[in-house]
Amino acid sequence: MEFVMFVYKRLYGAESKQLEEVKGKLFALFNEYVTSLIERSTIRHSPPSYPNFWKGNEPRYPELAAMARDVLSVPISTVASK
Image (cartoon, rainbow, N blue to C red):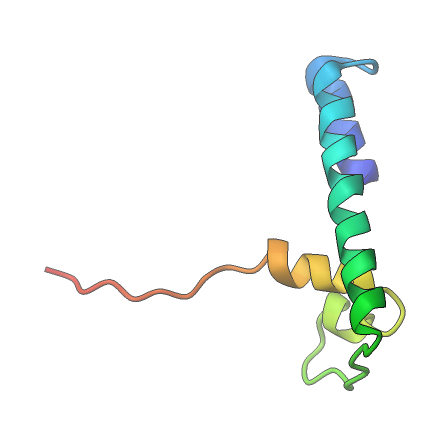
């Protein structure tokens, strides 16, 4: 969040409408993940299979790890070359 705030302040200024909008949407997204994890109430605590920050810190930050897994993931696709 600090990085997002830093970048938006540099781009648009400290009291920018864009920064407030992005902050609001990120906090709303986080609250959705908190709510969904509470409803499921079963958080996986699997040991990390490889050294990766979110995988290794999932027990410590379950909501942020779920967000990182969903938002930062790169979809795998194959395209036939011609």
